[in-house]
Image 1 (tube, rainbow, N blue to C red):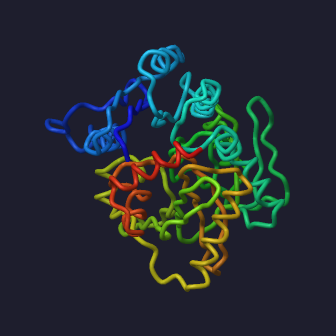
Image 2: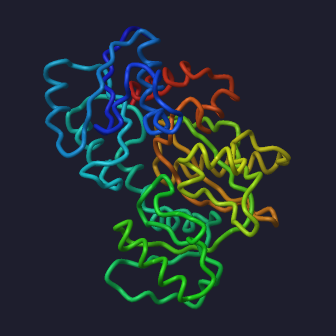
Length: 335
């Protein structure tokens, strides 16, 4: 690929330093994705500018008019302090008629709403957990058909925000308490869904009109406390010390039958079409103990750090990390 002008969009608190030297693993964990992407783009020979965007879009407009980038590499996960507003930045890029990486606006909107995505997939006869939405400022009344145990999450927040072992509830009092926690502490509506005990599987996808599904990946837990559920809490995802202490890691899913692997591939492609996903995405599944594959959620623009599951799955598919970043650039340019 020719040398490109690449403007990298990121939150101001995540602008990476020039070097990792002098930073602890926990400190570097916060901006590792931004560091890996920016450093790799520069190693590939591209001209890179990092644009910190938080509450206004003026910097994007000025960059388009004055620097004329070939493409924006979108690493933003929120706008105006709200994760569910990230699609507004993508809409602005579309209005400016400039190429960008990652998922487009419609896919972001459909996927970010955990209830809406489940409704759409259930309509198309895909297996999803039973669920109910509990809006703020309303009484918490559990539908009779929604049986315990349940797991309570934010309806729109990503990155396991608000998820802990206490998110799994087994009676109405705990359900009310956890919904109140999501309303008050996380600041969003809540969704409570059937808790599926089983294996946590991930399927990375890349493509616009045609989708390639990466090797199936799995989140594994080797040393959880007795009675703890195998769920991707905030600590599991974002605390390296906790990950090491509890033996939490990711790897290619083993012992899946060829039929099940093909089911994951076919289902992921169907989900991409139904939710109108393009660019690069990850679908999260639960494989129940009786072998049923449940859709949990779709993650447009998943974590691109070189050590995370998406890049690891791409490497297993034969793509080095620099090749992965180049492919993502090409997908953005082709759109």
